[in-house]
Length: 88
Image (cartoon, rainbow, N blue to C red; front, side, top):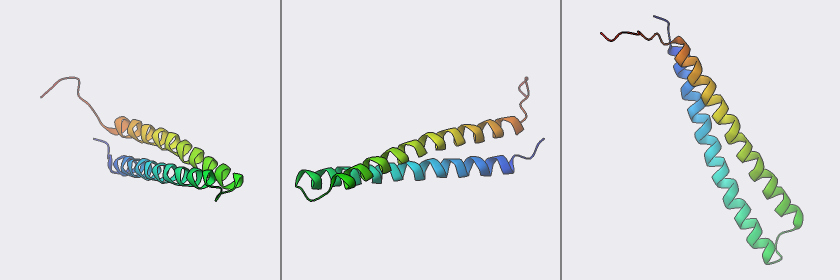
């Protein structure tokens, strides 16, 4: 039986990274909405709006990377787990 401890830790870290990326995207969405509201009132510049959009896009990209990392960690764990073709 292969030791899967390292692979399990990598999977856990990848799950944590995905949760962090999702939380960051939610925060960036809130910030973007706030900046757009301020811009509508003339209280935020075009540069502020552009920065909020760029930060939100970066956060969305981080989610894609986190999903890829999670998939890779799952494949690694699957590779170290030995499965019998016969039950029992």
